Figure (tube, rainbow, N blue to C red):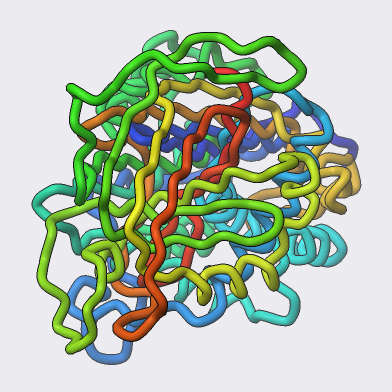
Length: 444
C-alpha cells in the first residue's frame, strides 16, 4: 500500500431523539482510490441472509450477549465522560454508539479489530454473533405499543467514484438494515440530503449533524433512533410546582418538579441510593397470578437513581452491579417528585474512545481494509436530545417486555422520593435488557 493520500472519512452518526435524541458520527480518512462502480442505493434494506426466509419473516429472538456487552461498554464510556465533565449535564446512548461502531467493526482487521472489540466489551464474541444479535435488536424494536413510537434506522452515504468493498456494503445493508446511497460530496446539496435523512428519522429533534463535507470525506455511516413514549402512569399537571433543586456545588434554585402520588411502583432503596422504575406504554393487566405493578410488564422504562453521593454512585456503575440491582426492585406504594426537563448534549468521542483502548483506529496504522484501502477514523461525534414532561418522554429507544420484579407477599412499605439534586437515569429495554440511554442531570 502506498503513502496515504487525501484523507477520506467514514462518519458514523448515532442519533436518538424525543425522550432522547442522539446523534454521533465517526470519520474515516482514506487516500483517493481508483473509481469503481457505485454501490446501489437502497431505500428498502435487504434482509440478512438466512437459509429459509428473509429477516422480516423470521421472529426476532432475544439477543443473549449483545445487550450485556453494550451495557458494559456504556458504563465504561459514561464514567470516562463524567471524569471529563464532572458537574455538567451528560446524556448518551451507548446502544446507538455501539451499533454504529459495530458496523465499522465489520471492516476492521488485525490490531484495529481487536481494539474495537475490546472497547465494545465484546470479549470472544464472533462477528456473526455480533451482527445477528444487533439485527435482532433492530427487529425487536419494531414491535411497539400504541403509546410508544419507536424507530431505528441506519444509513451509509458513500462518495461517488471511490471503491468501497461490496461485501462490507452488503453486510451493513443486510444485518443493520442500512440504506446505501452515493452522493457527490462536492455538491452543497449533499449536506442537505444527509441532514434531511437525519431530521426525518429523528422527527426533527436533531435537524443537522453535518455542517459541511471536507474534501477528505469518503463515507458517512449513520445510526438514527427515535422514541416517543407516554408514561404508563402520567404525572398530573396540576401537581407540578416549583420546588428547590440544588445543583452540584451550587445554591438551591426553583425548578418545576412533577409529582406522581400514592402509586404502586417498582422501587429499590439501598444504603447509597433510592431508585424507581417509571414505565412507558399502555397499562395492561399482567398475565401473572401475582399482584404486580403495571410497570413490571412494560417493554421500556426509565430508571431514576437518586444517590446520596452522585460521584460515588457513578464510580460504582458496572455490569455486575447493574444486573444485581435489576433483580431487587419491589412493588412499593409511594410518591415520586421528578424534575421536568429538556437536555441537549454534543460531544466528540475520539479522546474518550482512545482512553478506552481504541486509539489505533484513529492512527495512520489503522486497518479498515474490509471497507476500503488506507482508512482510519478521524472523528467520532455524538449528539443527544431528551425532553421529559408530565405526558412522557421523547427519546431514542428499543422497547421490551418483563423484568424480574417482586410480587405478592413482599413486605409492603411506602416511599417518598423527591429528586431535588443531581441524579442518574437510564432508559432500558426490559425485554432485551439493553440500556438505550443513560445520563445525569446536574442542573436542569
